[in-house]
Length: 196
View 1 (cartoon, rainbow, N blue to C red):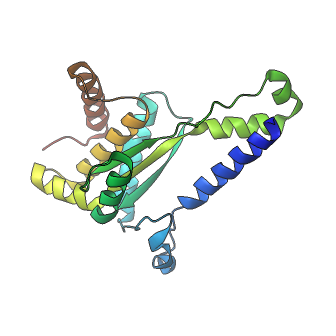
View 2 (cartoon, helix red, strand yellow; view 1 turned 90 degrees about the vertical axis):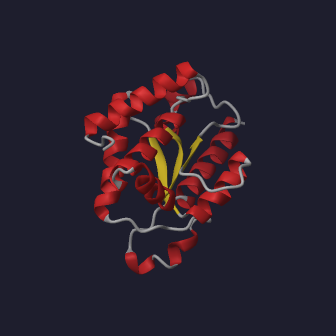
């Protein structure tokens, strides 16, 4: 039973990894337009690098250096589709955070893991995946202009904001909002992405 379950989990993980693979080769951009139904949006290497640097700072700040997630840059059109599918909200949004939660608890006893080091290693890798972020580049550009700050600052904000959601932070209550917004502002300010 455990071997079957593990096989299914491994298969699901591989499919997930393949579905959200990011195509970087510019000659293959047209073929990549529909990877997992996601429109690929071109960012300059510098813009992409800045977003990932902000995420790296956030990972370090909350002690999640060993965790991984997928980040996909999308159009407003795709953001709208995802928002409708996952949040039942009929409009585009700036960032969608999908926290990965297994449908069932996966556990192996110490003896199984000791007898099969490959299984232990695969389970450790499986445990590192925490979710997915979809960031609308269109919304980021719109909001940067609306709020009067740089596109880089908005991208950093959306990346950090979404990352914190995946890691259990929220802003439904005033206390939660104070904690989450304070932390994201601390991370962005430390990185030099302040509001102007």
